[in-house]
Amino acid sequence: MLKSLTLLSLFFTYCLTQPSLFGNSRVTKTPLIAIYNGGDDTEYRGGWELVSENAGVSAMHMTILPNSNKAIMFDAAGFGPSGISLPPGDCRQVFNERDGYEDQFELDCCAHAVEFNIDTADIRPLKILTDTWSSCGGLSANGTLVQTGGWGDGGRSVRYLSGCKACDWEEHPMSLSASRWFSTQHILPNGDFIVIGGRRMFSYEYVPKVESSNQMYFLLPFLQETTDPVENNLYPFVFLSTDGNIFIFANNRSILLNPTTNKIIRELPVLDGGSRNYPSSGMATLLPIKLNVNDPNSNVIRAEILICGGADPRAGKLVEKGIFVTALQNCGRIDITNPKSTWQKEMMPTPRTMGDMLILPTGDILMINGAKKGTSGWNFAEDANSTPLLYKPDYPETQRFMELKATTIPRMYGSTSIVLPDGNILVAGSNTNYYYNFTGVKYPTELRVEKFYPPYFDPLLVFARPTIVSDYKGIMVKYQSNFVIEFKLKKYKVNHLDLKVTMYAPPFTTHGFSMGQRLLVLGIKGLENVGLGLFQIEVVAPPMAKIAPPGFYLVFVVHNGIPSSGIWLQIA
Image (cartoon, rainbow, N blue to C red; front, side, top):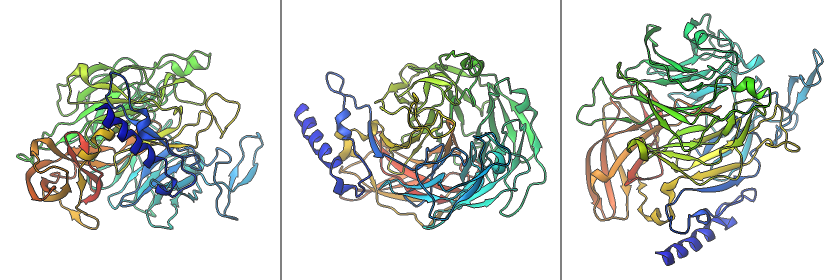
């Protein structure tokens, strides 16, 4: 075994250090296998790869676009010079707050958004006119990025970005009825978006059609009830439940809202132990939704929420006095489709605030980025939590967490991460300073981009990874329909019990929350061997839009815990 491991180490080290294989001189490669745990513990804990020294911007917001190799990264318009310029002569006029003068304007010729090629690390500057500071967004049913809110002139904006080769932002600065700063956006079963909350905005509204403007919003007193002296109810955690209601969590309380009647259906029990939303900045996700092929029209498909970390509600005030309080270490998990359900508590190996929580193609949960002390804000945190965690929701409670390989780059306030189509994780951002600052501070502005390879990239298992042959580009899959995924696997025989097919809605990630993230485990109808190492698996599409809102999803075949690369599929 050790001899085999050594040979594999040499092979992967060679592959990952050959510049000709990557075609970009700006990309530096760290040998993936070099971090394989030695000694008696030979369990692979993941690997890190530096893919870019300079993404141009510090990725406060990040998402990927369907049917492309593009990630979109952006920060805020008023954070001073970034690491990339707009084309010559293509500048914007901005208000200069730094000098303290009224009506002081200057030209800003830097880009504050980029299109990042996830294969080559090439970047293309994008031009945003209104300020996207602490805004929100999501992918529409047709794959367009719909992005809302921000600071100042961006507060009421709705922006659109499609994936065409030369596309740039289309902006509508007065589309929303209220200024949405630190708000949350989520897609609904009819394909519309709801935007909830914002700083001192105790209301919600629905994103209007292109070139239209909202004239009203809906009051939500729950948001006013959950605020506190440091506003620990910003960026509320919002998820579409399997019954069509909207779960909204703010500070330590949560409700279910009917988006059709605009009535609150139920208030759930309090999750005690501290504050979970920005600026305490815990993490949250909707756990994988398991669909039963024998009962595709069930009205009681289970929906569970997991919330981990956060901070003492007084943490923000204490930091102002130089006291960095240890972040929360506990998690709460609840079935929101069961009216009698209560929060079940669990403990993480380490405390965490400002982390990201991502659903992996396997259905496991990755917790990454953040800090162990303090809270969100400029220089409001200490002790970067550089060790990702893997959470296995189907394991016994005492066996769910596993610590993974740590990064060497602190990823704190303003860092982001997303799952890529090949199953690895793109990690970027971190800026604990009001403006870009690269020297003389403990945690400088971070323009470097990494990829994290979860444990299923264990080099010893590389030959056991399925490869999907099917291509659904341009094909629309209908709800309740059966469809076939053809895949290759280096085996003569495969048991359907060793397989699952997952369907993942990629999120819009900012400030520790991945908006719109959703993973479904599809029901398997049949499995057939159609050739040497070639298989077809028939699965059933989600039954309705409240289970899987219309749009683009990544579909993965998972064999014994090892996922294929995903293919894009559109459902409607």
